[in-house]
Image (cartoon, rainbow, N blue to C red; front, side):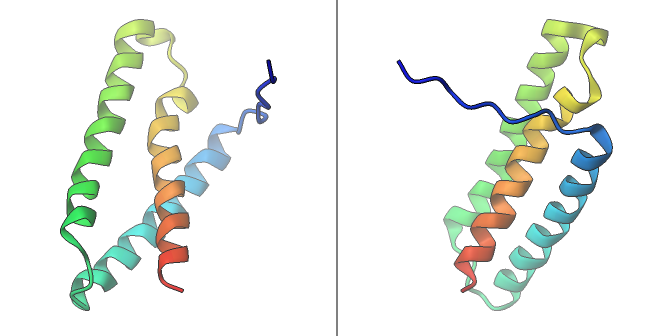
Length: 94
C-alpha cells in the first residue's frame, strides 16, 4: 500500500493571506465572467454549493471538537476551496 504524502501544516497567518488573495482572485474572475456573460449555470451553482459544503464541514468540526478546534482547522475547508477555485479559474481564462 502506498503511503500518502502529507504536506507540512500551514501557519494561520499564511492561511489567512492565501485565503484572502485566492478569494479576491476568484471573485474578480467570476465577476468578469458574469459581465462578459460567459459564466455558465454550473458555475453559478458551484458558487453556492462550495460555500454550503465548507460551512457544513466547519460546523461538523465545531460540533465534534467544540472549543478545542483550532482556527487553522476551521479555515481549512474555506482555504482549500478558495485556492482550488482560483487555480481552476486561472487555467480556464487561458
